[in-house]
Length: 433
Image (cartoon, helix red, strand yellow):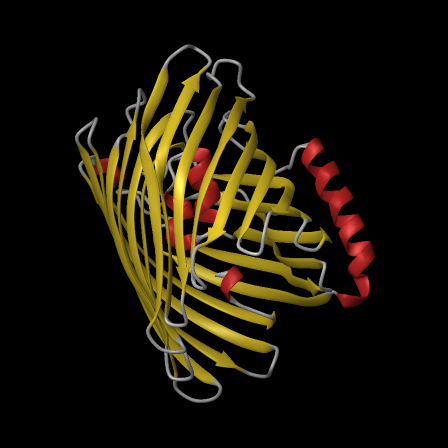
């Protein structure tokens, strides 16, 4: 399976890439990476009966690209992966991943451009196993300027027109979005800012059978930044007008809070209630994992009421690297029978045993209740790994994982045990697992 970006995407990305790279080639920091891996699974199709085992060979090449010249900044990670199923259970696969953000300040604090492209694989149906038959390439491209008007030392106005393009390899749900947002910000105190933001976002689907719509919103904002914590509160109203004539309106808002417990550990909380489309939820999850799980966004052409609470703890120091999180989420669609309530939690701990050897454990639990069709799915997974660094750039990973899924639909039940052995040369191993 190969995901192809449409020609207009290629033209924009190549043009912007050549321009940005030409002005920063000497300042570019490029860290390449290669990986050779072998994985054995006892249930490659992730089915309830007639399980098949397979030995999977994986080869990857990638790179981390960073640039910071002052007016121009680039942060990008790329990965090209080839997967061979030696027992022929699936056709061989090729996947490409990209997570890139570029900023160019044409006029400092006056006018800048931003380009962000996120290309990854995502389940077509999150309620089905993530086998190659249920994976599609998903691309989210955003591009536009920020225009700043500083009215005084304490207040400013920002104008943000933006173009977004959502493309899905399998589902015919691609769309273009054009938005215009205006925000006013006032520094009430040294660490406190208040403001107002509002704007329109027009969604045009490529499929003529899907109704286009316009989202209009206005919100009050409050933000505080202190040495030990910061938060942002956004509260207001969203109004959606469909081209077919129907409309949806309601109160919306969110709160994002971060508390620095120590110099190396933080506690984060995110609470939100939105009237949105799943495309926007996908974009938010790709940019900020604390606001949602990219792999659990149900893609549809519907307007939905999305409510989420996510709490996470992060620690990264010489003795322990950890991430613990829990999430509650409710999605209510206007017409489609996709309403669901999600409870999810997980943790990951990594311990350095010596300067060269480290080990870790991770687990994840999720419970998804589809309230329209009276179905409940629960999934539990646990894994352990050993990481040994042979040199500054070469290290190996052995990963053992067990996954168990139970559903009211018996054919969706399955369990799987897999062993993953990976040898990596380069900047990071996280993208290759």
